[in-house]
Image 1 (cartoon, one colour):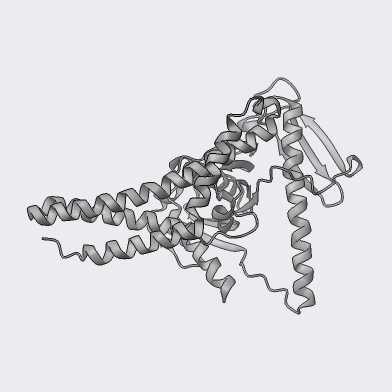
Image 2: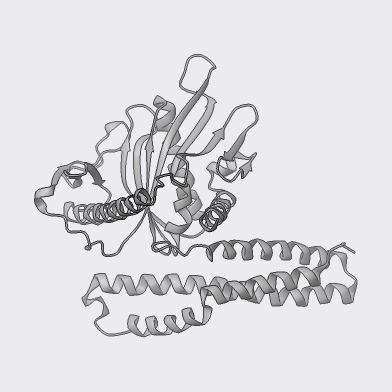
Length: 369
């Protein structure tokens, strides 16, 4: 028989689960689901599309979280039965199955435990992520596209809804920048630890000589605010440009000037949108993101002023957060947490949970220290 103390580990995982359910207030979530279902069933709900969207989105998010919590609880119960059957039958195959299930449950509970550390003001929001290529020429624009695919694959693996809002293609390989939205509970809190500068080191596929090339890309993560109207943006403060959407290499993908670029003149913030069907929709989406960025900028300035008055302006996060080595040792390493993976192909294919969990724990520890 396998040398595993099932009883002790099951007690530990059940205790951790109980703490998580208490922190996330499972009973409150279930009560809110009933209320939201009543609102969703009300006649005339879609007379106000914006309000209806908020109700249905919140209902979907709550149900997803509750289903995950209740699902873990049921699997713990089933595991105890499986262990008992294995012992009664003295069946090594069944015990091995129970060991694998225990490992899966422990991993799921660890993931849920990390979510309890997401208590920031905007952590529960969906996220808008922007990736920009930095120094490194074609390697940097190619790297930016690799990061875009990495995050979209991560979202896909978790069943999260993702939507690319704008893409600026490079003349050579890859992209200059891309902005996308991930609609999922706590997407901002989860992905905010990915913000910063990412570095890629590899033998360049674009150079004539087999020399190592280092390139950079920046990742920005902001919360998606349903109503960013707290920031008033006068028409005189913005410049709106319209143009035709384009694909790789400048190839036209739209025959009308539906794409929109809004420049906030006082701050120089630029927001582009081209993936909606009409110019009106692109402008509305761009204004929402602009208002969100201005709101966050305002809060950052207030926080910086408080730190300055307190005699400290040291940021808690370094700019360069992660290095990807695609030559020799084949390694991805987070420079803050020390978490690493020797499977860079898997990481670029969306295997980010270990890095994200380590980042959230690191942030929580530093915040409380």
